[in-house]
Length: 74
Image 1: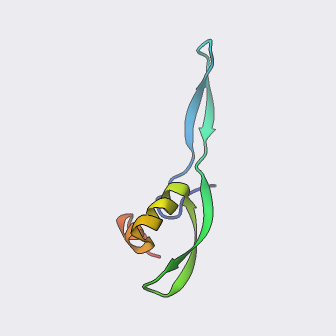
Image 2: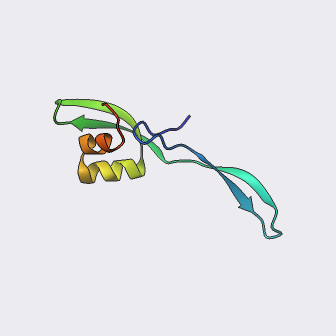
């Protein structure tokens, strides 16, 4: 199953609505990417499944701060 290793975000159940207002179920998948992330405090790389939003935030604030926000031990 596609799931973010840090936030735990996964696919959502949504509905298609046709012109005649018929509603059918469908899945909204998350954009999951596998990335090697460098942890400077420990001087090592970690391979994680991350959403694209996770990647953008990690670029901005850093991996250790982002993992600390979600209570994840790397």
